[in-house]
Length: 328
Image 1: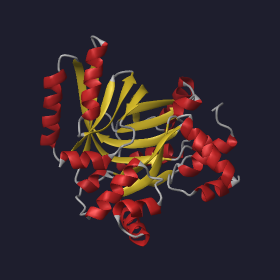
Image 2 (image 1 turned 90 degrees about the vertical axis):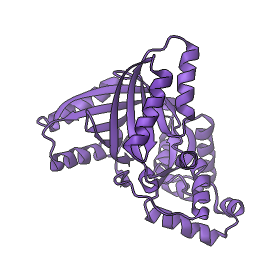
Image 3 (image 1 turned 90 degrees about the horizontal axis):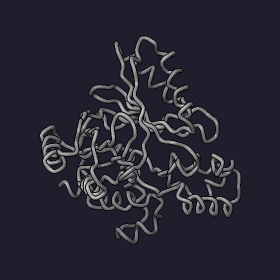
Image 4 (image 1 turned 60 degrees about the horizontal axis):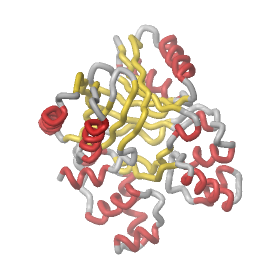
């Protein structure tokens, strides 16, 4: 956090729930001039703290479920490594992936309509790269939620919107709506005038279409992609194994996680563990302290946990439209 002063942190906190927020409103929230807000925002982009602005869409609205594949792999040489990650990065079903350090070496989010599509993907992956895959674990994401970065302003976190990815249900969309989503997915700060120019529709029609897409839950929210390593933080995954976890107890754990300033997301899973926590913190020591507090709060439920540090993210844009168009 040494590279970020209070103004920078206020700006990041302002846009993390709405990357389309106008500069004038950002300035008002940060209590600075528009000129300063514009300059600081641009500086964060140039230093790579803000990697871009994207539109998070709910895969379930396209009839898709997210399957999670955790792999332990062995790499003989750099060429083999580049080949494997090149395959993963370019595959149309891979929504997001990352390299990890810990119990697993890579995690892959796979978009599928049914178990047969996942089986075909995994069979193809094993056929091509089976020699280097030592172990694998498969889970299904049943819901996903993002939280604000409470630590930016030393506050508790809050749930952004609502949980998504709950029930796959295909939503009908017009060609105009799909084109708007395509443009927003690549740059969610694109202006209405530019959207109008590219789609051939008037601004009023575009505004109404975006509001309808948000109301239908297709657009979850407009998100900035922030590289926390640029200001000295680390990105962890925590795999949380529960026992005797009733619905009420799980909801209590979710509520606890939503308020913690360093827990950025919670994924509910069907598989060997029940929750995946996404955590950003400035030290492993603080991560352990947080998890100790969690275990002490729910001693009868939290059986154990595994921690992994994310060393490199791939497809962090979470561009769903491009993948949907390729999947067909």
